[in-house]
Length: 104
Image 1 (tube, rainbow, N blue to C red):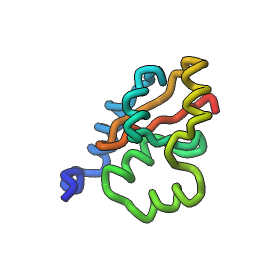
Image 2: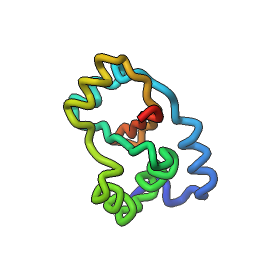
Image 3: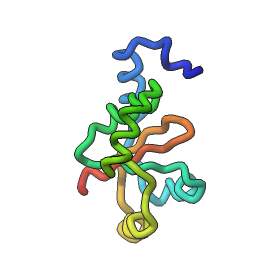
Image 4: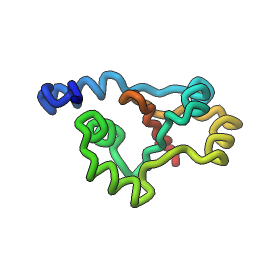
């Protein structure tokens, strides 16, 4: 059972917000290699996506996946971010690292 179900939504969102940070793609390589990085479309709110993961909102996550607004980072995107040493917004919702390129 997900421990986040017992936390008030506003408290959980505040916790997620506090844990969100800008990080270099170079620092995320080991997570990418493990297949643990998901890219969040710039059209979505990273906190809302993280909240959906934390509260196990499977229908919403499935909809984002189906619409292509959420998914694994493709190799060509990973290579471009690596070459450009891109800084990304990121938050960990174990086992995933959610990343978002606000410049995209």
